[in-house]
Image (cartoon, rainbow, N blue to C red; front, top):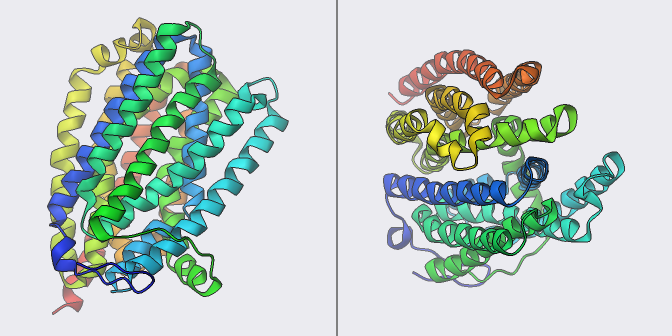
Length: 427
């Protein structure tokens, strides 16, 4: 393997692992991240009030929303570009420059907007501003790192960086809980940001060691336009998948109450642990579909089976142990959110079908259709959950499950039709 400046050459046979190994490695990594994240919220819930926990959860959701907007499809563009044989170093330099600038701008924009709309919250804290900005930038870079390593067949490398980052954040939160009960939202946010930063630094080191890449971000117009042309349609589609789950805690915190966000978010976060299996399988399915389009049908059904097997196992664990898991945060969380967690976990099958459909649309360039489906479904999910918010987290989760299932049924019908057409075209 050889990786040089600008014209880096990477022998795919020496660095790529199997699609299954890459997928399962990503799942293990996200499981480690989610486990550490859940432990972080357990410590936070016992270190301060429900209000401060709710505000911190809303801030974390805002950071994640900023990262999803700021990535501008750069990760997907890297998958496509590297899959087509372009030099990884040149592609990555442009991608990291774009998302770094975008992440900074969006984070600052959100902070200014929040300070103007809700000046009575932590938004006026200097510590909050600094940690929010760092979290948004490093979080965006981590997304690109993940997808770059998937494109290079090294998705399994995500496990150690997420385990280390999550452990650092948990350790910092534990120290805060030990030293000062009643920690404010900005202090908890600083602990969470520390973990994200560590994961980003470790990812950069891994990219250097695995493929010899040395980052030299550049904003050359030609390269930037090429990446954005590839990435933006993918990013819009990704936003339709992620935005509903990220927006809802924010909407709850500001339109209903911080406590409502505090009781909803742990259930959603744990359900997302199961949902990450089909989401990550979909990323690898997309990458393999670009690299080997003739095998798209077989890859899709294999990815869907593994999504249901791995994600389904996680969902069963969540259904069975919903109450004791949430009870770690306190009895009020278990009482308010256990049934909600069970209902959300039951949505795993529907989410897996949606991810398989979206991955096929990405690989085939059918963005308009998938985006229309995603926007419609996302709006319905948020509206349905908000309308049920006054009746508690369980009612919200039931509304979410019903809407998600209806959307997945329609997407599943379209998935079968598209794959049938792909099979006919390949004959």
